Image (tube, rainbow, N blue to C red; front, side):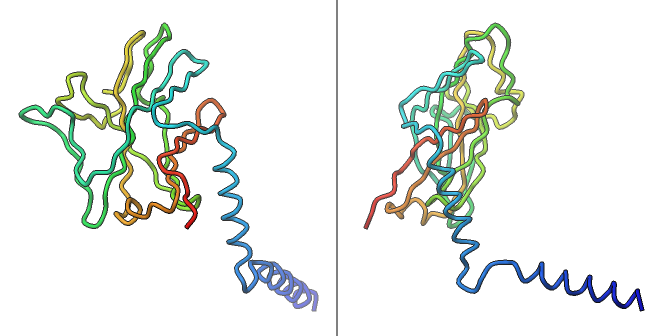
Length: 194
């Protein structure tokens, strides 16, 4: 009898817990979307062309942004690496220059990661690549991204996205970085009301 009573109580508890999800009008997903939008807005806004300085003696300048189905180095050599988007996709490329003003080598594994936020809701992880100083090639491996003291390195952030995200100019595109506990939002495209 006790076993039956315990099983009955467990069943009622499980039924009650599963019944506490989102309601029929989807308010749970709406609250989640509003929370994500709020988190995006809380970051420090940065424009392309601006510079961010860090307490650990290096800084990053965001120099240019563009869309491309094929990402190539600026001055391709006879053999070089390139990145080709899948059919129906394109790359958003945010170019930066990072300068190491510290006394130690800045390891490529410690460079800031980024994600693209589209329309304050959709998130895409960025891939880091570095361009050779002479612009002849691109490297994807972090060991090629080490920056010696008082040197600079060109770091590109690539995000493969559906092409419709490029053409829908009414919605926002923000590249978000989290560095030293702070969030930076590099505005690629601002939301425009219809």
